[in-house]
Image (cartoon, rainbow, N blue to C red; front, side, top):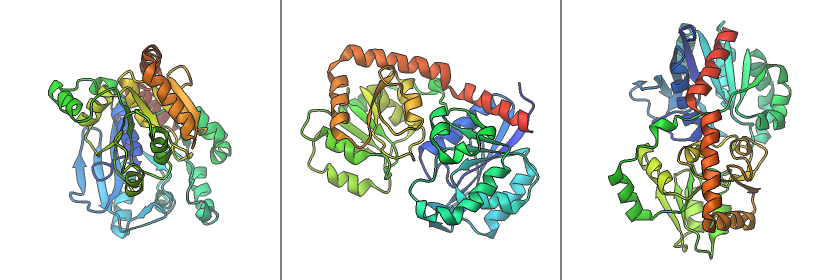
Length: 371
C-alpha cells in the first residue's frame, strides 16, 4: 500500500461532456491508482460546466468554462485559471495529460512548488504550422516535469520529442478493468443481436481525421464483410457520405458502456484502421481483448503495435491501404481457428500487461518516487 496522496489530473476535456480514448485513459488511471492509496481529482473544461463539481467513482471532477478553441486547444478565462491554481496548491502532485498547450501555460504561470508528472499521450501531429510558436513553451513545460510517461516503448522510441527527454521518460501502458465488462445482460445482448446481427467487424471511436475510417469503408466496398461503426465526431458527415449506398456498413452512433460491451461480445473482431501517429495507443483494443476478440490494426509506429502483436493477438497491415485491410478482414472472416487463437492470446496479454490495477500500481510507485 502506497502512502495516501492527493493527485490532480489536468486535461482539456473529460466525461460526461466528451467521450474519447484519452478521457477513458484518465478514468482508468484514476480507478487503478485508487487501489493504492491515491485520491484523485480532475481539472477540466466544458462548454456548459454545470454543475461545476461532479463526484464520480474515480475522482472529483472540477469543471471550468471553455471559452474558445484554437487548433483543437481549449482555453478558459481567469476564473478557470484561479480554480486550477487553488486545486494545484491543495494536492500533493499534479498529473498533466499531454497534449494540451493551454495546460502547459497553466503550469508555467502557476509557479506552484509541487512535483508534476506528464503522461505524453501523443505528439502534436496536425498543428505543425503552429509548432515554431509553441515549441519554446512546450520545452519549458517538459523541462519542468519530474517524470514523463510514454504509454508504450514504441512511442518512446519514435517520438522526436521524447527522444530529447530519455533520462526522465518511463513507460507505463494504459489499462482497463476487464472484470467490469463481461457481465452483459442477456436482454440487452438479444436486442443488439436483433438489430445488427453478430460476427461482424467492429469499429469504436470518435470520428477524427486520423482514425482511417475512409479506408475501412473502401476495404469492405463490394464485399459481404459486415461492419458496425460506433461513435460520432467531427468527420461523421464525411464518413457517412462515403458509405451511404452500402448495406454492409451500419452506423449506430454513440453508445453507453453497457451497449458498447454488448456489441463487443457480439463482434468477431475489433478493427482500428488509424493512419496517423495521433493514434498513440488505441484503448479500444484493450476493450476488444477483454472479450477475447482478435484485432486488426495498422502499422503507424505507435502503441497500437505494442498492444496488438502481429500474428499473435491479431493482424497488422500497412496504414492507408484498403486492399491490405480487406485481405486481413477476409482472412479472419473465414478462419475460425485463427480468430479464436488470436482472440485467446489477446485476452492473455491483457491480463498479463494491461489491467488498470497493475497500471495504477506503476503510477502509484512513480508518484511515491518523485514526491
